[in-house]
Amino acid sequence: MEVLKTGICGLDEMLGGGVPAGHIVAILGSPGTGKSTFALQFIFAGLQNNENCAYLSLEESEKNLIKTASIYGWDLMPYIANKKLAMVNLSTLNLKAMIDRVETDLPKLFKAFIIKRLAIDPVTLYEMIHDSESERRDHLFNFAKIIKDAGITAVMTSETSKETPYYSRYGLIEYIADGVVILRQVRQTDPGAVTTVIEVSKMRHIEHSREIKPYNITKNGIVVHSGSGVFL
Ligand SMILES: Nc1ncnc2c1ncn2[C@@H]1O[C@H](COP(=O)(O)OP(=O)(O)OP(=O)(O)O)[C@@H](O)[C@H]1O
Ligand SMILES: [Mg+2]
View (cartoon, rainbow, N blue to C red):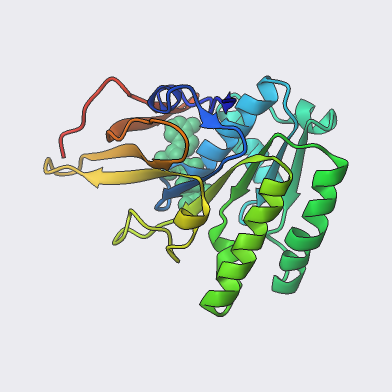
């Protein structure tokens, strides 16, 4: 089975190599846990492997994401110029335009430009625009189907709240995704100490680690300390 390296040191080890090709993986985390960093790192690993990639932003501007990536040492500009990376910003669109872009324009883009990796950051904003639960479910299923039909491997970041760090806001994406990775901040009993931990709670088709491992956001991106244990 083909697997794609996430580019996140330690996480690929936990996965036994990487993410199975064609999977949609949800990255759950509260604000500041590194979801966008994860998505950028995953995309940059693909670019370095000469894969065509796309980054669908629902929150941050293209300029901001390029800047964030550059701080980690990932220069996206040459890849954008060479058309290896498509940056698509949906953050400024109204609701109807956002749905149209996802359901009409994206399938066209995927036909014209064969994409290996895709990041959607954060998918929560796409979920929020639908009023009823059934609409939300239908549109999210449709979104996932568009990605699957195009044979793309994708990460979708999703917000959690401090109160329910194991579940996405609507509790839907976990079922639609083939894999779920949870990023969490854990307050230690030692006052002031916060540890960030990662776990793979689901990854279809592979035998992955179920351990909780500490991670840090460093100047080179996310580093998972897969050899260390966590005392909670
Ligand atoms: N160069 C850096 N070196 C170390 N840590 C950094 C660096 N840049 C950012 N961070 C850490 O990463 C966090 C932000 O990461 P990121 O934007 O990926 O999180 P996020 O989960 O996407 O946040 P949000 O919910 O706001 O979208 C910062 O709060 C900071 O702790
Ligand atoms: Mg973010």
